[in-house]
Image (tube, rainbow, N blue to C red; front, side, top):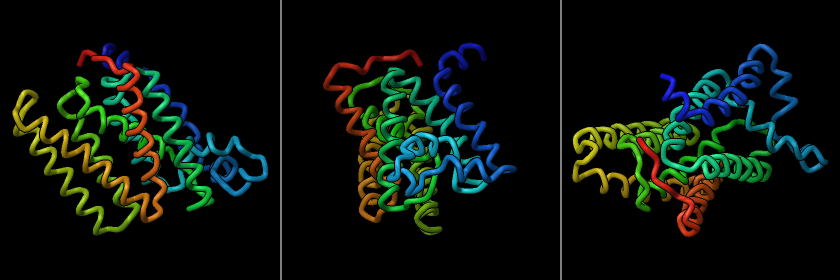
Length: 230
């Protein structure tokens, strides 16, 4: 247990910082109003771009989902990425989502856009030779499937089916199975295509994924990736 906590200490720290105001807003809605993204950013309240990452606009269900995926995606990413890259992907992805949101959805909040930054970096990490736990493609695709709920019920059903199929493929191939590299590549390209689609329809979760992917490529070019023990 101690080793698992040590490996995920950055994720757990960000989770606590996010969870406290996110849970406080449920009995005290004024917390959300005070911290969320709004047109007031253009009037000088720039700090809302950051504070909107620690409150949620999706009700209690969206709050639980975002916090759960922060834990799962974040802990997986922390086993794959250098912590500086983890933090950069999370913050830059989150700010990207909030900035885009000012144009597409001026009032809102949530750390989902920051998780998208991590997911984009993880997706590319799968195909650039970085050692990753075998369940990493499953984590990425389940997050993409969850995001489909922001589009429609039909999209959510399709996303869930894709996630279940990916999970079955990884389980069948095993950690050293021949199918794992193929699954990883498919998940990477599917995630990028999905992010492009989200961007095209004006969904704030698309650009952060693409930004996270770009950061992974920059990190690879700069030699900042390194193998981490599973």
